[in-house]
Image (cartoon, rainbow, N blue to C red; front, top):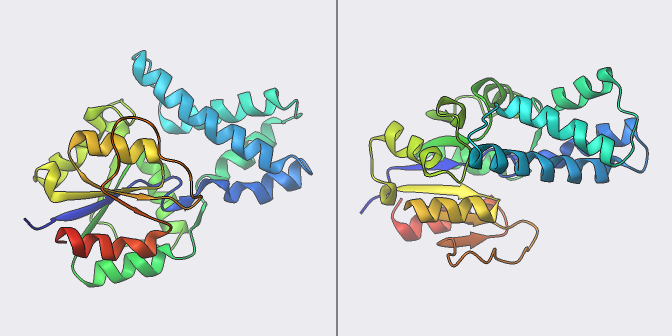
Length: 226
């Protein structure tokens, strides 16, 4: 069986969500890292809560709401202008250093590439362009089209629908262990980019492959038949 395409999670996998720390630090000295960590955690929690409760708001709204909560929880005097400045940084996140080289190599070899992300189409297009990845992805898929966040099965179904292929003929790559496991539950061939050497989430399932960076992905794809 040949793998027909590779789909990537965007935030935390292609784009470093904590590249906002430099800006946050300039606004709130010695508090930038804490703000970034709280912001990311609350952002994800809101996606899960909204999906569980059928109270969808798009990822731009969720990201802004999570920023507001995080600043308040850390007692940071975030002004509307600073809020807008930090939120805008999400459109220009830095790619991880190895990503463009690996993506270009895969693209040049003829592998069909795509993203499958919680981000809105506008957010993804801006981040892809800012990171220098324009033209590398055949599919840019957003859960905004169904109003359900990962790990809802409907979110992962976007990939099989766009590619007109069964899940076991598609590889899915994420740096979020819970996301890689969610994709495994759905039936994708999964690869977890475990950059921080984190422990495996205890969800009775493991991603099929694990690496410390995206540089380990081509070997995994060769093994499974991409």
